[in-house]
Length: 618
Image (cartoon, rainbow, N blue to C red; front, side, top):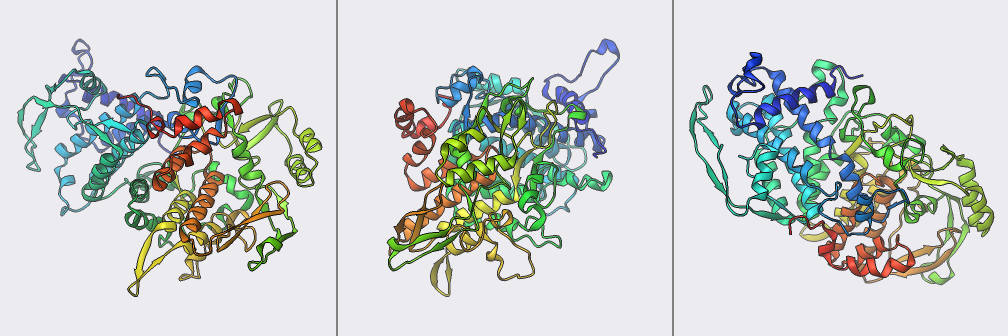
């Protein structure tokens, strides 16, 4: 249990923010004999800590938006008949400026609040700007605020394609709105400049400044904020658990590992594989006595679902914490569940379900690479990824209750025998439900944690980068495609450290062996998804690029199984399509979930990259 009520802290932070966000020197009504002025604030460490928690409250307000925009526009999530009008717009890529899920307001709130806190820290504690000064908690707070702001901009630009750059002098949402709505040059009438002498921080002058609206593209956002994070951050993350004896606090705030992950994800998006690999390897190969962020037995097989039950330092890198007891809840159960009072507005696509149900375990192939047309399946194995799929990522509900796992397995087995009719009877009249935010939850909880970054996601990002990343060994260019395969299958990329109990992303849930792991070579066998019989093969002999593209596709499939509904899928598809310079990659996958009569329309729409973004600032 946490010893500090984050909701109370957030309210305290909100009240303090009202002071900071106003242009007046007084707060509340002087007739009440309350005269709190800004120069009297931040005399106590806990005031800083309250504002810090307030920023996380603002970030938590973005969770539902992050999930809907990151998943509903992709291939794993679709609307139901009860979806609200705003969800229907997003699903159809026909989004109006009034759409509540598309509004950038919550991003601007977080950015302006971060601007405010950053400015206060620079003014009150100028040592945060001095790289040579000893690191203290104010440096750590400063690092958190810089990460928070960079994350907000990065997510916003992935959604909108371009975003207005909010000058640091704009420290309230009202100022931001006035700036954005101004017809031309905006005059910021409150721009206090302090003398940073380290003691008094006396005001030098208060001079209005003129701000011209600038819109930054994704490239500019990544360039600006990676530079800021690399050069201005001395430390990240206050060690709260020293006081409250709760180590999970470390990963419910921005921390060094989350800083590396954010930088790595931005560099990967930008195509700078060398820098992406550098930051991801800081997580994947982290020296640790307890094998932190290593994919070992901790969450193997059925225990994989415990990733979503509690916060754990071995998997969670940065998680936004919710708790019903402290009135900190979200609407994810309402979006996904058919059980009253929830509304069941979103559900998994057929493609999402097949990702798990057509995964095969413990099968045997008789291969023949010299005559691949003679290869055959000797033993089809067992169907279904039941560790990550049924009962945790998705469920079939009858009258609000999940049907048994044995019925689902029996249905898959009957399909493998060609008996689709009987298979369908076993799971008829069910609601197909996203269950990741409902697993081990009561119907009224609505407080599933939202994992921003976790270990398996970073391992898969690193594997993706390894597909194309080249390095020089003994003056000879080399590639890391074998390590990409090892990260996914069995963790054999750790061969230099045999003491580490690595299993790999698939391996820790039982699918990383010589047959059931992903396999990439000159000859690659294709198998029927339902019977597991070999149906053909791909020959990449002498065609290394095609092999890389095929491996990349397998890694994207694995990201879909491991990370479905966690808010990143649409950006995964965007990133690969841009890397390949092939918009049809995204268009084909997303359009597949639409009815046959609309598939071509959506496909053609998404061939235009401009339609991948919500053009809010046109």
